[in-house]
Length: 454
Image 1 (cartoon, rainbow, N blue to C red):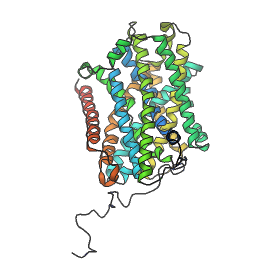
Image 2: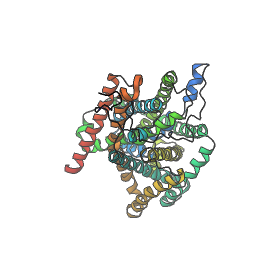
Image 3: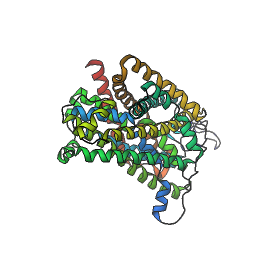
Image 4: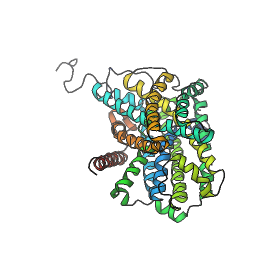
């Protein structure tokens, strides 16, 4: 065969690493890519601090208003039983987010760009639509949560609060204009507010330590009880969020680490440390919400508390702490503001990555917000505030249903030595990652069967 003749076994539309040659190569979030300085030498903690930030922005999605609905419902109905689901989902999140960071650092592509550079246009459209559905579901929870917080704190009607929440695009524009580090500092400050608020409530609730520890042990009833399984899958959907995988694979690239093997190896180490520590904070907040609900509502016979506003009204009287309800609402508002900021970036990354379509961030956010506000207004008009809790939990189940469409491509990419080279994950890690993906798929199929036939 002539040396210049093409090898018929080689797909000529792919390069040596297996990426489609016709896929765009624009940098992810090009306006802030490699904009944060990383010291080349000095103490290890200085290099770690340079990478601190993306993990906390990702962790925001793990304690957004959608988590509050599922955690409150789980704690008030089933006591501490579902703490094991929160722990399991958090461990899943730590693994998957570390894989997302690895993909972005090694390939210089976010997850959406990697999909576009690998799959056919038809598959990419399907993946994009699935991710958009997840972002809309997440946005729905944020709109409702922010609106409820504004009503509890300032008496603003729910519909009015939802319309105010739609204006958060201007907050993001102001923060981004100050630099990506400023945006990260804003997010981390609000996370500190949330953590302090719940630390005070945990102390006031004084839950039995033995019962809390037993709650972290898995129980078969979680699978066999359809109602408990529904809430459990909602917790997983609220914790392991599809759009966070796209977000993390992009924003780790804001660091100006050396784009060579040594620089990428160190970047993976510090980025994984950053996200792991940040997600442990998310574990504390999620567990705290469920523990407070269990210790305050379940043990006092209020097992039907699922509404955030209902929890607000009962917290102070049942805990005997006048400021408890106010702290609850302040933490909810901080959570809603934070999650809207990060969802904005995720929406931009997904649209640019899958479609190579670049819209101003304010235009992208207003489009998604408009879609999310419609069902909020409809539900509020028909059912009043009591309908919002069911909508919150349902939005988290929708998120869980979209997870396989993000998790399976991610695990496939980071396991591929052709694409990742020496940075491909070991077979043992890949096996665990595929087990996680399998668990998610099986739980979703079980939920669908229960909803259709049960």
